[in-house]
Image 1 (cartoon, one colour):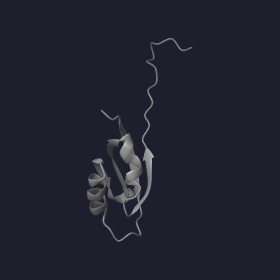
Image 2 (spheres, one colour):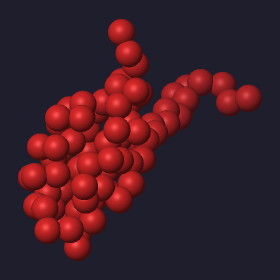
Image 3 (cartoon, helix red, strand yellow):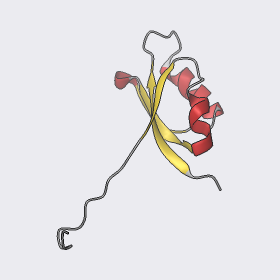
Length: 80
């Protein structure tokens, strides 16, 4: 099974396609859309590692960034 990656897709606001149209096209390219953020012109979702490059080919997409998460140690853990 391919590993999944959370991504943040930046959309060109000058492009005539609506965010809903771009989100539908991204879904066809393997993105499982989590949220469409109209005011930020951003779409978030999850896709396989192998699908990340195909997302950039969708008209209206400016950039596809990997979403990173960090976990701090518990306050009771000994800091080294």
